[in-house]
Image (cartoon, rainbow, N blue to C red; front, top):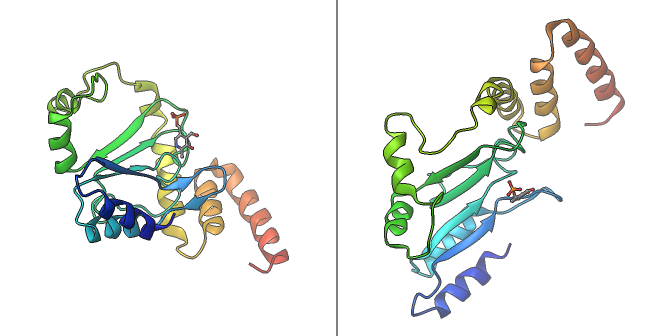
Length: 189
Ligand SMILES: Cc1ncc(COP(=O)(O)O)c(C=O)c1O
């Protein structure tokens, strides 16, 4: 991802025909992550009103991500990658600017019509049929991810191992720990 090219392209769009810059946070097959902050800076440097839309389907809970702090307008993620659940829940985060834009967007839409969702979310509800089963699967992967994120800021593998051990049945934890320790001893890092 070359942010300077985005900046150049946006600067050339003097009529503001471009409505959004879409970026993939984490490219699933290669694990290459994009510098989202650099894209934000490029949009700001071009003084362009385009929304910043980020696909963090496999990035959420796998790589660092800060929707608000990085000035992202729309983040779309899913249950099926970093959160280690089956597919079926999509997590969306929207800025006030994105919500405002969706009010005047003329594309026909149903599930992406945010007003109904936002209204019902206020009382903890969802306007369609929610995937309730997946919510029951939530606590364990969430714990793994939390431990994985918190355990090791230097690299992913040690954190993943810590998360996996924490989620193992108590009777298996010792075994997992000792085999991981042996593997670690035989490798330089
Ligand atoms: C980065 C990324 N974006 C989008 C998708 C599509 O997700 P879905 O199959 O839930 O539409 C995938 C699926 O593998 C993905 O890895």
